[in-house]
Length: 296
View (cartoon, helix red, strand yellow):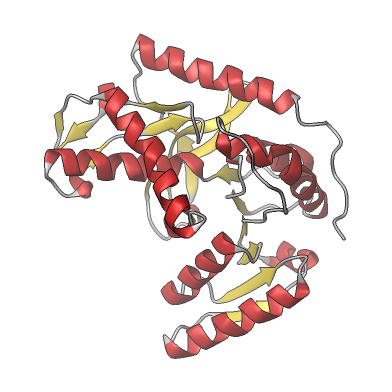
């Protein structure tokens, strides 16, 4: 397995993979060699202390072709000044690096999970440039996890008793599937505006206190990897092709195979999903078609 990116999310994700002993071998790849050496050494210490069977090694992009799965958590250096659509703030900065990596991984035939924001746009860019047919963006998975946590607290039940999805864009145009949400198997009323506000406030709370979300995205990746590798069956909300864009919808994994399982949507929910698709379609056209370059 390979992790591309040794920043905040890459570090947290790699530590989670080692602690869970999910891969037998973990390659850490980054354009920053000092960062790779440091993170590899730290993870090797973790593996020994935790009695993990995972062997951690530094790697190059070419080495990733031998992996069962690759997680892309790279982030280029930029200052995000966006006050709205915050997750889209890095689109122009991250697209060249994503495109370059996609060129280098052309023909990769196994699972690719994209964490880099704006995840719906970057997953699409990677898939289109690389030609890989098993690419998933991770954003709506985290949104759905947060949604179930919030609904569980409102209903005073365990989160496992909440069934519900957040789909669409990972960001300001997330769509709550309120009509199909159930608690302990029973339909419930969802105060959509209040819940949406809470969903928007949660990442802001994390960023204000720690600078960046780390653990939530790492957990979403770990859960999705288990299913995409055929180690567990279940549903994950992932960014995949929808009409002519990429956005989050539920995917049912059985033995590692993924099939879309979008729930029944009301007219309002469908219009919100279509609005998210339109916005993402327009946003993707603003990314230059040929921004790929080899990073120094």
